[in-house]
Image 1 (tube, rainbow, N blue to C red):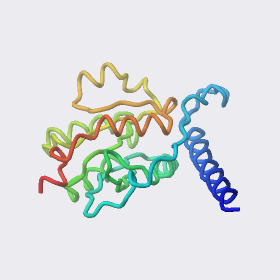
Image 2: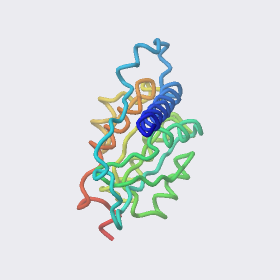
Image 3: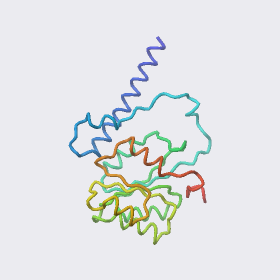
Image 4: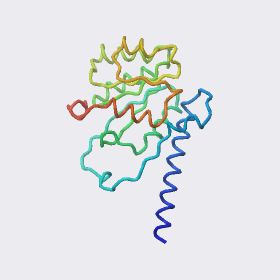
Length: 199
């Protein structure tokens, strides 16, 4: 009987993971492709030894600012990253819906580790201007910046990456849960470079 319960628990867990992926993909993928074409991008988390997930005392979370004028982007990002740990550390999220609001939050929270930044908000280049403010006016050289855009024509990756001091670039039409997690893993450096630990 206990074996049956364990199997059912695993099946329910798998269903929840697939549900989260489906919602996340439906928000960001607007290229008209079939669901089958996105199948390779959906991941399932395999069961691992419990010791790998044992609670650790005094873990300092990565503080991440989601900046986007679309509330659905905020919701799906939270759903996709729910329970995820990056380099063994939990994630904490703040929210801004404009470049102006984001600037205020950045000033109020010097321990921010990363900003997920939309390009088109109040204006077609609001996100790009905010990058310059962060680097030149606020002198935040250690704050990691990942641009996320639904309209890459306004900010071509090669041009933006060459001209601005950003740490990552993604297009919403191709963004999946697994890709977002991979970007965070690659972008977030070790604790020695975390602004939150430097204070």
